Length: 581
Image 1 (cartoon, one colour):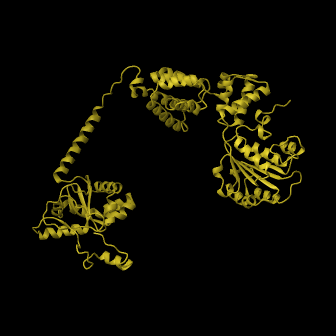
Image 2 (cartoon, one colour):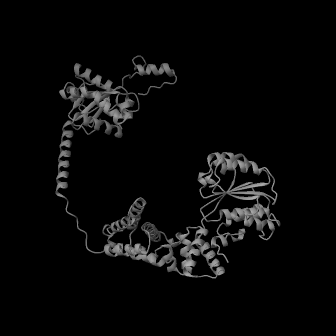
Image 3 (cartoon, one colour):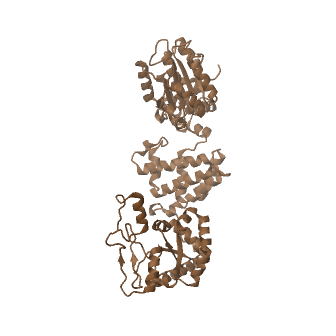
């Protein structure tokens, strides 16, 4: 008799045969029982979880000659013919092959006609996310208001690729991954019915490999049963699937803890000779350390993973590592796993990753120190000289800053020493900041170095524009007014332009261009142009009164206010303009 693949032979033919989707089965059965079935359903979930099987069972249930019934009888003519796919009114359409708008238009035309063989037409569209945008648009209206004799069942593994307009027209059911216990119980039943002998730990490992997909688990079982001639053992499953037992990873982890490089390389070579792939080894090792971390940090963590078959062995190994070590190991392996996808020699990357992990015990806590004590490597002589040179330069800069009284930027840590300079207060929330040693900037106005900056200013602006055009848009409002050592003083007409230029990222661009154009380090210092003008006038008059800050208009009157305030009043009216000192 011709052999039929296990996943086909054991495909569920009724709702009670389905594994692990009780929340969906109960809802559909209640809807059939109460005659409240919808015209459109969306079944979404991982592969092999029963989406298409549930769709065909639902089609049989609504068309069963003894129903509609919560369970199809699978004995009447309608049920048997739907099972074999011989009923023209129940069509299973592969959207990957029929994804164009023409196929959907043809379907839309056929929907109008009444069913000829069964009670209700059912269209099962598998992998519906493969339809084109035009095909979805053609399906929209029909899906929303189909004839009363039609039911649509859409199945997909990628519901996020469906338009929201399609999803909103369907009742959505999310199929879950089948749990390890449910899969193992189903595999045990199938082995008994098929006359196969299988170890329980072998079936558990097959279930873990399937990642929650029942179809994948049956395919693996079918393959292994052919190889083992009816007897399935844990070691045979390992040999067939290229898996690695957790005991092997425990030995690898122990070697990492000891820093035994030779044994680690021998184990990797052994894995490769057995036909294991480096990327699969890396993935399984990541899972192993993740499970160790869970068991170390969370009580009863063996219930959080399907991979821990012997919790006590895991717990003993977890005690040998610190949390910091496990975090470091997982981070390192994850980084190398990402690089391995594009590597020509993935085995080499796997070896490098494990050799790098050998250094972790020396960096960890004292409880896991193994072997000889660590020694600091002698520093390179050239590196020391370079660091000394950098330190000397920093000391010189600090000495210059202390002598000039500047603490960096445009901030003033000491009050200006020049007497009788009246500094106006800017309108807004806080007074405008003035550079320290303002009198020295005024005195250096005619210095030859400053004349050089004035000549090169257009070039400086152009270079700033080339570096970042947004910074140039703000910086062009300023003009150079003086120079003091490495500090270039720029005065701005508009306070917003000045504040934006002062932002750290913008300042770095400008100072880099200044240093490049002047051929020496340069720092940006800013102030308002009106304050600079007042300082220049004060220097020429040289009054003898003490320096003090005063508001421009203490009486709050509008007679001598700034022209831009008059313009604001003209634009918005006196009722909407509030002047704050």
